[in-house]
Length: 248
Image (cartoon, rainbow, N blue to C red; front, side, top):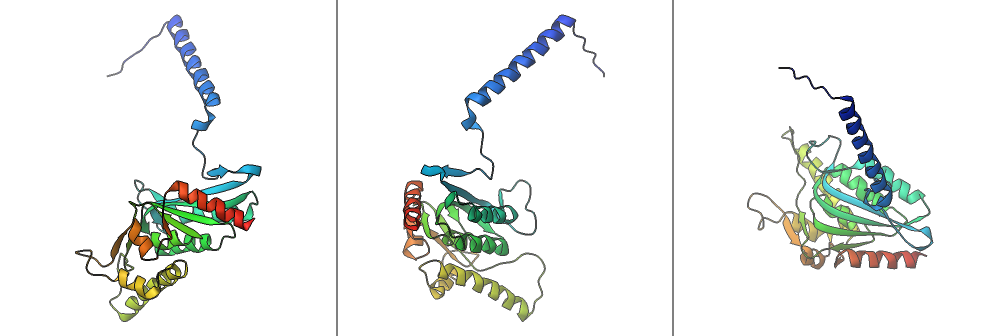
């Protein structure tokens, strides 16, 4: 069934005037409240004196690898993070980086690429684990110069696993062992935990009923030597300013 709608000239004119008024109000609100506009990915920074900036980098959801994650998943895309970190290294007005993590983990290659990039920055970097930083999120959390975790934060250390078809031969196991060794080496190098003890936590059979690994709370992660200190955003910013001052 088709419906025919007819407007008189007066009704049409009133509707157009109402639309114009609404558009003007929206423009005025945007001009009066510019701070309500969310920053783009290239504008997430904190201002310091002398126009210096602290870059804010968020690693959230799943660390996406070479295959795209489902559209309803929150992801961190390495092809966006890596150029951004290169941009941070190049700019002289950016004097430090604050990394905020709440990630379930994800692709090993992508996660290690981001972690290596963060660790190689010449600018001071502080990381803060909020919620959790699991799996490949562990080396990401320790890639900074100093790391924090909130008291209620958690970290899961577990062996490397893969999906899809694999060959049931010794070479497949050796390949996974080599990937796992890369994670162990990087994490131990950038934290206070030894590679041997980290491997013990990774292969622990007493925590999960159907898996291997260890779930660590905030204070446990510090006690085991993975994270430097329990703290929140206040402590993280204070430490970052301290490191920036030492570098200057």
